[in-house]
Length: 412
Image (cartoon, rainbow, N blue to C red; front, side, top):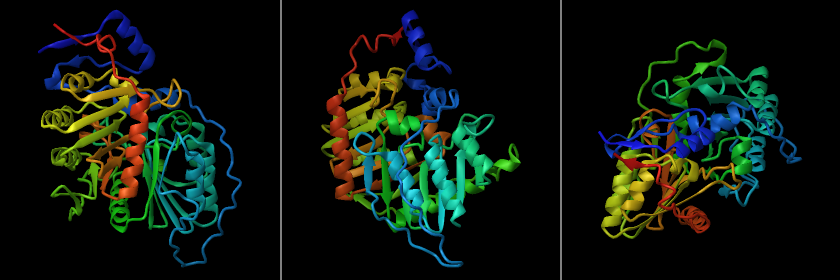
């Protein structure tokens, strides 16, 4: 087996950037990931520091509790269809969304460290809203930040979940409000995400998508452990739900409206979209380690499809797939987040300028095999156009890695 050696300077840089660990990088036939954000960044800056940032209050009054037995359809007044962290205050939008709930809110979060978001959930609970929370296990046990401690101390109905194995995570960042609105995207409810990263946040009312994510949330709830019974065992692991009737038409191919992980065909659905593309593929991806997806992109490029990518610089520096993409003619660039320590944390792709794939799924083996993740496909012109515009903005602000940037990968 060929082994990629790392120079002495490279070792120092990795230790500084990813103090949690370093995995050796074998040749293409056996690529391991540098841990995704679960290991490399979010835990490094949020779990280990316990950082909670004070954010400005919206100054909004919370709605009154619904009369006993009465159901409400979620009110969308003032909420955007989508928002991006470089042009909108995502923390205010999240808080406003929670404050608009009248009957129920079911939340699945990889991380929560914004004090004001925790307080908004408590306001909802105190006005009679049924609040249920699923958190990634490693963010709650054995230690947690101040915002999650606040949640624990205020008696929320909360459970924790890990992925398919010990290394897997519950990596989602979505909420279902009043059973009729899906709030999703790449954005953790964390101070790091809203202040330093490039992120997206979406509000979706499509009944099929809301219902699919509702089933996924229920599936995760059954796979989770109540915090007051931790470390008790969860229910037996079963496959996540899937779209029984793919309905997203793209260049003669039918794609599912939603796909969930682990091991439920997410990678295969994305490859199907790649193979169906005729003109262009634009990808903004925090973490890019999937050999299969890299190979599919390389084949598309070879067949005349214009492929462009923006990846996070910190993750890209660790991934041999970045070099593979560049060697195969893909126009790949990388960048950091909105600040030097921030991340380019998007996970979306636009195919032929008319199909969008978005969610929490990084293009990695962990996302496919171990983590609880979500993506959806849409051909909604407004949503596709907005994300395509965000890609073009990021691409124009990013730079291509130099040969020196990638020199720490050398074959014996």
